[in-house]
Length: 116
Image (cartoon, rainbow, N blue to C red; front, side):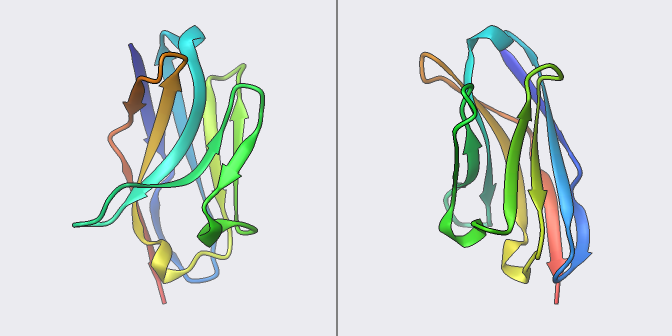
């Protein structure tokens, strides 16, 4: 089992920045990829950014050039630096970890609100 705890959400004006953190605990040796997803009411959860154990990253087109995902394996933490935030980035952001067997784990989510 893997436990994920997010922090860093909040409210910011458009153009501002926030950094989300996700601390992982539990069976960490089994973790391959980690990432951030977001979900709006009535919509499917969508990938924002992901990073593999080897450091390979991928991003949703809507956040490329604005968001940066990073992973500190020593601290078992993954970060999402969000710059140039837009009102459409407002959402609940969820931390995700996936083990080598394809099992996904989720945090409880943190709300990001961007006002215009």
